Length: 113
Image (tube, rainbow, N blue to C red):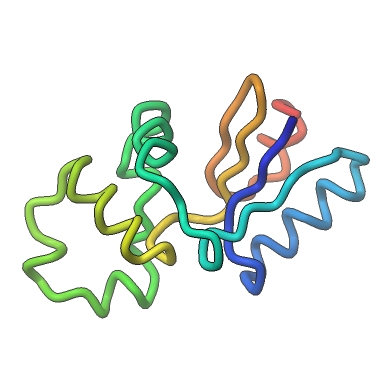
């Protein structure tokens, strides 16, 4: 089973969904902007790939945070911020029974899926 996590109006999510469909892969889409994301999932993802890879520090949401929120980042603080501001989670996050991918890279997706 494949679950694609993201925000439905994100261009990268649209590209990812199109790629999955074009390659005949069934998936469930979880819009964490609408449905949120639980602490345990974020913790598991951070343990697998590191909070640094999950935390989107290039987007508008990151830039709008005050300096205190961005300072002294660690896993616990990153998880709290990503739960409060789901736009801080890089997109997409793809989770299957055997792998987890962050971001859309067609070559990586081909080799793992």
